[in-house]
Image (cartoon, rainbow, N blue to C red; front, top):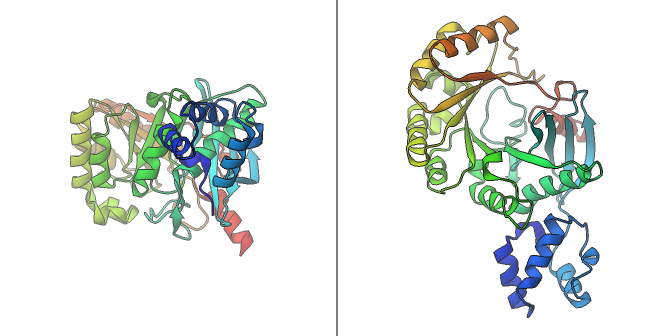
Length: 347
């Protein structure tokens, strides 16, 4: 199988041009066609010589994704189910906010982290995506937005899978989408979320980027977190928090803790108090997320008044916290839900 053209950074394309006997500036032209003009074939790259277009067509596959399903919410959220070359499927979500359009991308087919409240883990992990398959989600969505002269302003790497288990591809994706000659999405407008893969939190801290880091925490202590997130048995709560402290000290950047509120499980006032104790003095923000109902799971959503009570306790203890605004609730926009339905229909 030919490699995807989106798998290549600009520097790698320059190396390829050199090996192909072409001048380096052709790589800049190619990059511009891919990410600024966003054409769908090498034949459309009209300022490249025909012989070079033929070489590119022979060496690379151009499109990594095919649209299987598109669902549009009343609030403007659009969820795509994309098919891959090997008949697997992934989800990508485009969301409209008052500050612009964001896209939530997927980094793996499925997930092996095993969070007990999440649909992404149903069926386990199938494989990692390449950097190009992650890039293609952004490019494909942007091509659709081009029809209405809209632009993706920010990226959240919070779709199915664990980005830090596909670390190298995720970092390469970030280098491609932030390049000034390409999509040019600002690093501060990108957030990568991890469930706490400790070694790669340290690696990410040392990358010297301005990209935001979010941690899925979902519990204020080791015992409860292990019940909700089996990954905690491999990377215990205290080790995750130690890595986060290193990240904050190294980068000076605020960390977001994502906390899914589950009715009667982790949403009691004592949980809020304990979480405030753990986070006391840290440069952080807590994003409270009312858990999405997943038919295959037994968890229920925290009552509205209890969500606000949890939030008030954190705020009263000096912990910056917000309640996530729900988007796409009417189209199963939470991670893994649409793919799970697709998998069931295929069976």
